[in-house]
Amino acid sequence: MDKAKARALRQAPFLVILAVAGLGFVFLRPWLGFDMLSDYRDELMHFVAGHYWRAALAFMFIYILIAAFSLPGATLTTLTGGFLFGLFPGVLFNIAGATLGATGIFLAARMGYGERLAARIDASEGPVHRLKQGIDESQWSVLFLMRLLPIVPFFVANVVAALLNVSLWRFFVSTALGIVPGALVYTSVGAGLGEVFEAGERPDLGVIFAPHILWPLIGLSLLAALPIFMKLMRRERRG
Image: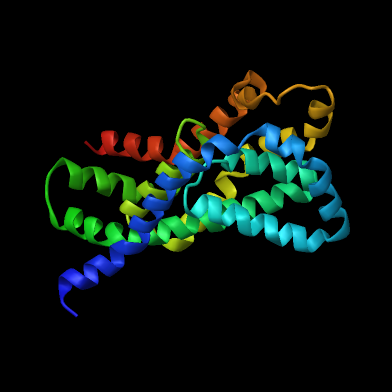
């Protein structure tokens, strides 16, 4: 097999993910919403009551597919996890599904582009090489920051980590732990959806930007960034 075919095979999984994500955005997005969850809530709750672990496994499988292919509805799925299974163990099902799905797209992007791109940057000189060196020295902090800050899209965090050729272990651990705060918030909102539906209202998805939620997240982000600041200070002293 020549190099061109081998490269195409490595890139194919990530390109398939992008294609499916695009199709999902066009065809699935109009159908996904709280109205659908409200309409089928009785059937879903009945299924969970009668087939709990089958429902839990099916839910996590669906979440993995949504996260891996960057399909629309990730937030709705997280809320559904809380709605169907409560805050606990709903939050564990949400974290498991999101983490495994993110790992899938991370591996596809790293195999197709990350390893080759990282090798080129490491072999080069200039600002891009120095930037990657700085990030490599603080990979844990950078990975946790991307997960903790609500302004970084989930898909972007997955692909950036892949393009930096981050190790699978670091990516998996930082994802599983870094998404805990956000997962707790949205799962708890989902756990209260029954009352929201009964009142004929819609959940407030901007709750994560409320001061009592946002400030602790900023505090955790600053804590994650502390090693970066300390390294910068050491360099300035040496200089």
